[in-house]
Image (cartoon, rainbow, N blue to C red; front, side):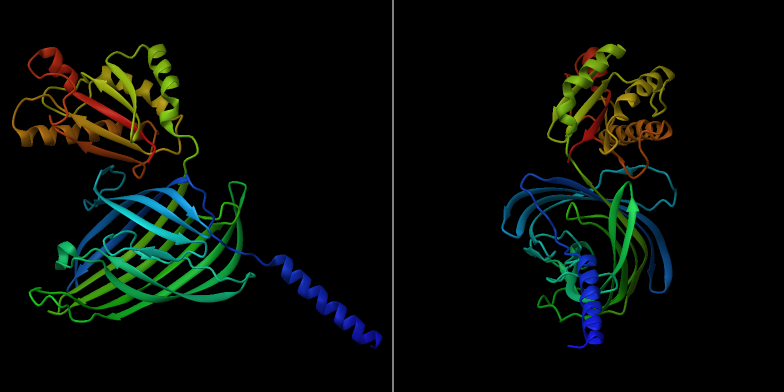
Length: 403
């Protein structure tokens, strides 16, 4: 071997070594007992038959537990909650919406195994990683599908699945909160002609689905999990009867691990409430997390306008809530047994919203991390036969959520 050949060979081996050092293996990592939350927000325009129908802001809140790990795969138990704000007003809290339960297996490369009895998640098999190591600039493709719940719209009993082939590009790294995140560009187009359904009684059904999705995934390779992602999308559904539904918008999502449940802080929060001297205020641990119950909460008569004395109490409670920056809040309104059922329900919802709005004004949470519910008089904690009992039932509960 000549000296020149030796130099060329050494240079080639040096370049190969550099590329090897810069290559990465991306894998989902699971441990039994892991618990995490995904919060995705969607802002979209809905167009029907060529005319603007409405603007919608949608929050999807997903709580996930890893129930078992078997080799390279893990069983997941998840609860999906979807809430929609179509009012067009920004910075308005979201009501706690419809819940979906789901059970699925996901392997280390990202591939799902899930029964057709489950309608969530919608986008499946994204991202999918190659078996080999990859370097910045590498691309690969993998099959996936979207699964849509068309039960109400078209009466379809099973998820409506639209297949796609996604193209991935590993574009490099960024720093966020002292973490190195790997950036993966994901793009896929949709064009799917549905087979004619066997149920000939259906008045209409989706015949052709078209569109695209462009996602930027920020991957934490130390955790073996997605940190967050952004997406822009457009989906067009043409039905057999010629109706056209178009959805166009943007989405983003954040993933948060739960390492210290709020329920574990019961004694600390109880002690703080006693120190602050908060009257008619109790705290309990329950299946959702840690719930602070404010009984006999005072509003202006027959309204949802908080009295100043109650605002002072909520300001004090806000100091507790700020100690849980990673936990969402659920605000529940309750009334005594007075008036009509419809009036009680509406008033309980409005009062929960009033407390949530005030907490947002205090900077405790933003609109995407605080939710409201109203229960009317359906969940009394005392008999409604006495004034004392009615006062206890007129309450607002603030749950620091663990799931």
